[in-house]
Length: 96
Image 1 (cartoon, helix red, strand yellow):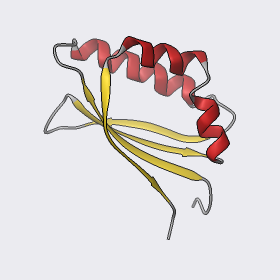
Image 2: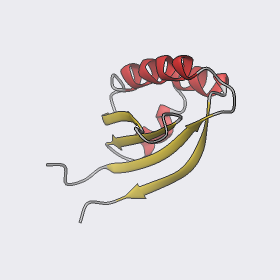
Image 3: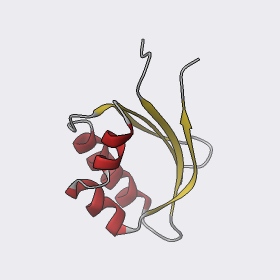
Image 4: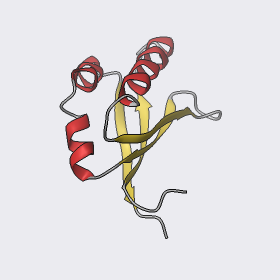
């Protein structure tokens, strides 16, 4: 069980008329590459059954600096440059 770290849960949604197959493909690539980051311990993306254009991202980084570094990696910058999804909401949490 994880006792410390920087936990993030984000809800994202595919933009407008963007092809959902492309969104899923690019999210899978982002997930695969992010999991290789030294500061990443969990990076899991789930697709909603009720609304396939909605996704939940579960993330755990060893600390806030590792999350900040995540946004400096080329694979993250590339995904964000595609403008395929919007952030609906983000939660940063601690284990109780």
